[in-house]
Image (cartoon, rainbow, N blue to C red; front, side, top):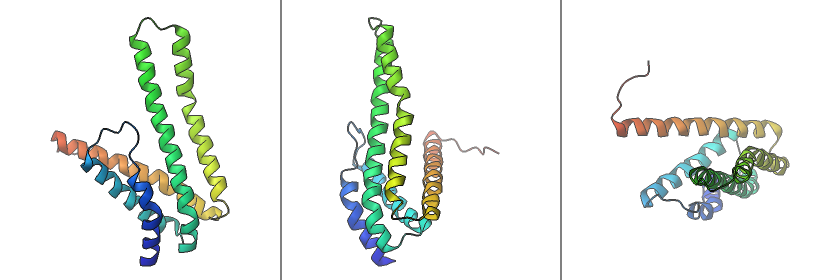
Length: 165
């Protein structure tokens, strides 16, 4: 297991160092948190999917490429929302401008689906179907848990100490 973790750290370290998206306004503490989350995610993913060291060596370069592509799509989504908001606020823009921006924004889910499909086709030769299914479940559950964690941290910062029961 230690050997596997060393391989993972070597494969992932360059991506972690360049993980800061364009326009990211967080300070060094925020980046450290992001790196820790990514490290934990890789460790948990390896465990949940049951990757061997041989699979990991082939899988993680593809996974990192996929994550980068998904980050770029999400960044594009943020840019499109900002653009749409600016178009709404500026009365000089035509309905045609608004329609184009809305159309571009509506295309984001399709781009995400296409990227996910490309990724799963690419890893099909590395992971058998059962491990691919474990990966899909892991990704969904990890995202949910991360959202819950962020929500809990925000509640603590606001001083909300009530139970939702």
